[in-house]
Image (cartoon, rainbow, N blue to C red; front, side, top):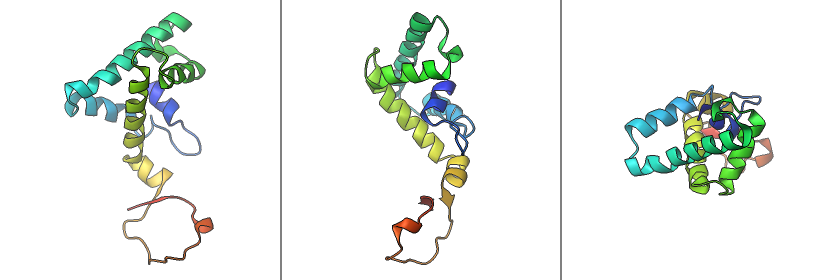
Length: 134
């Protein structure tokens, strides 16, 4: 799950999913909060990706390369592995939610303004640098 979450939101000029603590967020969410039925698509999808990695690349999913992870996620996204489509949508949402609710997502990827400045209804969109969170 750790490597796959980094492929959904990789490190670029800002930290990626691993640095933001997304894998721990997902594990905690699934273990402590999610209903058993909500865990099924994630766990089934991870099992299917693991099986496909062993079949295609002869390595465990955790030891696959970034290119192999991308290929496995693409198979899941295109519903070409068992439970793939349902897994991919749920997993991607967990990664995005975990990232953008983390400190890194809020302060480095976005600009956090606890008290936004004055309202200007005619502010030119071309002058917007980042998306703001409050």
